[in-house]
Amino acid sequence: MRHTKVKDLLNSTTALHEVNAKGWVRTFRNNQFIALNDGSTINNIQCVVDFENTPDETLKRITTGAAISVTGTLVESKGAGQKFEIQVAKLEILGDSDAEKFPIQPKNKPSLDYLRENAHLRVRTNMFGAIMRVRSVLSYAVHSYFQEKGFVYVNTPIVTGSDAEGAGEMFKVTALPFDGTPRTEDGKVNYKEDFFGKETNLTVSGQLEAETYAMALGQVYTFGPTFRAENSNTSRHLAEFWMIEPEVAFNDLNDNMDLAEDFIQYVIKYTMEKCPEDLKFLETRLLDEEKSKPQAERSEMALLDKLNFVLENNFKRVSYTEAIDILRDCTPNKKKKFNYIINEWGADLQSEHERYLVEKHFKCPVILFDYPANIKAFYMRLNEDGKTVRAMDILFPGIGEIVGGSQREERFDVLVEKMKALGIDEEELWWYLDTRRFGSAVHSGFGLGFERLVLFVTGMTNIRDVIPFPRTPLNAEF
Picture 1: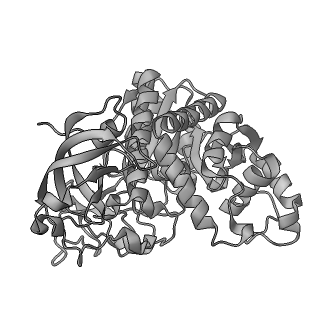
Picture 2: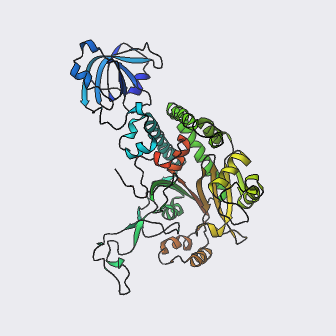
């Protein structure tokens, strides 16, 4: 008999038929009641064992974490909280789990730190099962949105010779030996003898390559892993993360803002429709977690309210200059309650400033645009004032910046001058400059860190908890 998913059994419309279910034991009570979960839903199905006619050796092997197969009759449940249960006629242990050694015991309520140390098993908890199902649905929604809009999915290279951000915090890729590394006459590493014949790194962004494809295919998007060798051991940073990066020919900054707002609202709405039980569970988890926090540190909105807040409010579009004026004159800044005081135009905004604008001042998602050129990347289009660029950041409640993008600098001469001023080698990016030499046109795009999006939708507060196996400084376990 083929086994049926727990989700389908719980959603069944008919009872009194024979079924088979397979999964992992969450709990086993009174030598009779098994809570069985197979990962298809946050809900367990109760399996009722006839303990009087089940060998003691078998009962002793029904432990938390054990994999089992049960065959029996699906009947209406007499207990509260579920419609159906299985009256077990046959039970088979597929994989034992030593109750004394199994690291994830639900009754102990393991901490998030402890679960990160057991990332290979944490997904067996309700919390991480819910997070990863939400992550999966969000990922599908990303592709669904762009495919419905006629975008072409482009796989940009993971190994690259360029630094798209100009930050220099990249992981090097080499086949050279660490002992006896070949050197040039002036003592530097001789990359000409390396595998690719030049210095290469893991990518921080697929944007530059995506731009080249947008200038032929019109509208493209990337969705893949990116890497940053930034030694930031915080709740907001990962060394390996996933990026969503659309690039669209003939779109200006206003078109770019429209696209980003529509995209975000689509994927959140899609996920809310597909994952109601998981999101409700995560909302309850967040409320329980916040009970231990001081009132001032608690969220003003419950998780589902926060998601609906993004869906139901148009994003407020505000220039950087206007935002600076608001922040400079606001009470937290005047009373020096910000960690970073805003004194003058040109300041690089911090998360505390971004959240103030969203949560306190405008009380809706905010898109900031026209940032100072000297705090933004070289590829952003210079405005006529000569001091700002056509950049945009989208700010969300509870998280601050979630999207960064811009209208790209399409003018060859201006782009070259900006590269020279920043010391960026024209020869390294000759292919990028070619897109400005041959048929250049206005185009725009943005980048959205996928884990930031999952963080927002799940209500989690540490980015390490929304990716299966986090890569952080001094940690590449699993």
